[in-house]
Amino acid sequence: MNFTFQKLDELRNIKNDRKAVEVALAGYLLETENLKLSAESLRGMNNSKLANKIIDELFYQRQVLANVLGVEKNDLKNYALMYSFNNLISSAFYVGSEDDIFKTIKSHIDTIESAQLKIEELDYILAYSPTATFKEYILSLQLEIIEDRIASGFIDTSESNYFESKFLAIRNTEYYKKMTIALEKKKQEDLIQELTKGVWIDEVFSRVPGEEVEILQDFKMRLAKIKLEKLDQKIDDLQVYEDTKILLKEAKNEIIASIYGEMEPTQTLSVLQDIVIKNDSITTSPSSAYCLRLGYELGEREKDGTKYTVCFFGNQECEELAFYKGECKFIEDSVE
Image 1 (cartoon, rainbow, N blue to C red):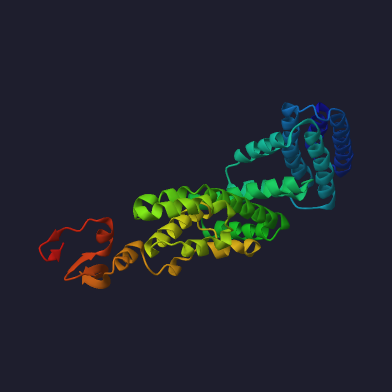
Image 2: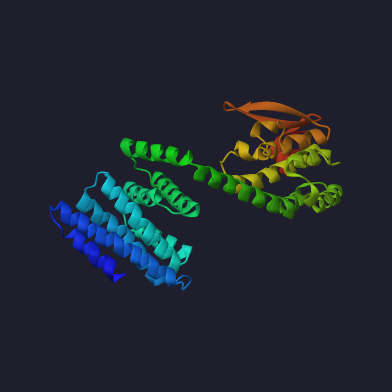
């Protein structure tokens, strides 16, 4: 390990001598090959300290090669980076775990203040990443940096355009598509697990007539056998009042929102599009349904330019939500 650093330092100290650079570079690349062979003999030793040191050199060598060979891309620099990177990263994987290597990379990136420079440093790693898993990790780290920077605010137009173009480039990769599909599958599994527990049904018990509780308890017991895309239909088939069905769907939608947030399911899991109730699909609120269930009528009032719904019963009326909550006070022939 010390020999590679020594050769790298020799390379760094060469000034304006192309031939000397090429000789020193060949010596450095040979040492990275020797390091790889030595590390291979230590395969499985799980030496995180040594693995971290190798990753540190990986970043250091990029700086040295940029100073010696120029910041612009050229064949010699590209070959040197690719050859040495493969040797160094292979050596790190031989002596350390994948988690250790990822943590070291993350720690190095965290020392860089500029989000754009962080992305560019990760681009270097991404260009020579040896495995799909490694590339997926780098891409996810880049996405995390972009999201954090955007969330922080105070982004000028040029920076915004840079992150937008970078995000679009990442989104078009096969790795991103795989990650998206994996994420959606994980969310679907979480959704199935949460819905099957039936806690969302328990929360409805206190808001429905007593005679419906047993029906809902039986429904809860059958949840594990109900397919997600059929859940709304099964709720509609229950022998309960319409406002109870609405309450159930709203409770179910809260579970979906807690897992998916604002994210729209993609076509890769189109089944989820069938189980997410759009806001405009519920035309009647629980309070309105409760009024109608009791045989009363709904009407509309306006106060200070604001319209609101009331429940009419006989010659009396009450704002529908207050009526639903039992908050109306009856005084003679009127309802306040």
